[in-house]
Length: 282
Length: 251
Image 1 (cartoon, rainbow over the protein chains, first blue to last red):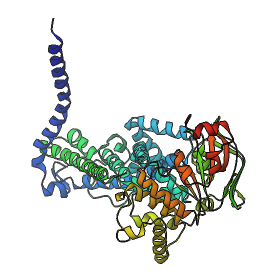
Image 2: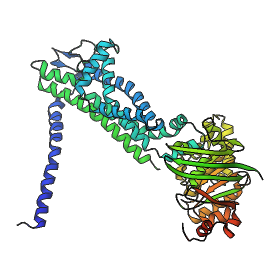
Image 3: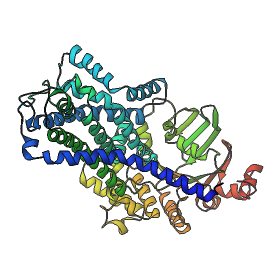
Image 4: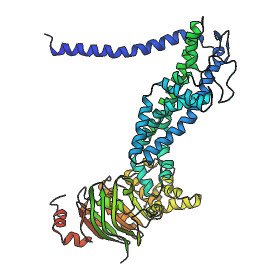
């Protein structure tokens, strides 16, 4: 029989080894992408139009398209999500309606992303007649991202001490004045962190944009919100499965650009959160 | 005598729980009225009836009559903004906003639409002077209020309240977060303030009630057991329960 100490040692090492396994896929993904993608990153790759059936040249339109799409998502989802969260957190009483809303939000978060894509196709592209466009894609991604923004905003609002609200009310302020002057200013960094993380997630989504905005190839940049756009996630799919004889370098380079974009957004969010922690003194 | 707050047959329920039972009292102008009693007796709840702060809690129902300056303040049609301007509140823990000292003092004025820099400057000087902070802080009005000591923060909170020109100051255990020296100084301030304002203070510190109040009410399990001049309450209580409490037999 082993004694307890030996068992403890074995248990410790097994658990450690299993935990280290978690790092492995991340390290592999990032390592391989950097190793094979980095040589592709040149000014031309980032800022030129594709050539030779997307086998050479740059991926500029896909970068621009993703950027426009993210801007559109921010434009719709931040105001909508933040205002809904303010209503739920600061205004509504707990009753059947708010419980229904909360249930809807939770369920929205559980819907598979391809379903959003088909929903967007049905509602925005076809029924509302936006066509496959940046507008339709941004609205589809907005709906998918709303639960995240609402939840993040409510968490940020909840970190503002109750006592601030009480004082404000006790000085005769209305609910809106209290939200506007006391609650929101103290919650904004948290809201921004949540919103940026949501945008970075939206930047990498593929299924919802498949039928609502993504274009296989466009010879020019999108001119309006009603235009289709090339976007990075879909472009990666195209390069790796739809176009024959694309060099590995171009494929990995495109992946690296998308991962880098998402990474930068995450760093920005982490930086804001760190600053907020340092500043918070109550 | 001039009664500024009168309650009559006041009942308050949190859902099914009755927190205030048939409370009737008069608060006289320019006096300090203390509410004492053990934790959970309803004294803070009663205080929060006077500026309708209980409205923020869901499921609260109040019946009976409460008049401030002769006007009924229960019921749906009451202008809460003007009520709360008239009846202000100081809380248990000093709770300045994470803003500058200046912005803290003028918060209420800004909310009520005052934009004139001169008026705001004067209000800051006057309010901070009333709480004896102006001399110390006049050169650091733009520093963060949270950098002040707890006592200074509590004074600042009182100044923030005075800036909106209230008539009644409700104080909910205003010294419970302060050390004895700071407590003494805040008590001196209250004695000074009562010349111009009416003060209702909730305290679980009986000595404090005895030291500073003119009138005193003893509450127990939602009932106002006894109410009268502080001297009499502490020397010749009529009710056995009051006597037991102030002599320290329970509480």
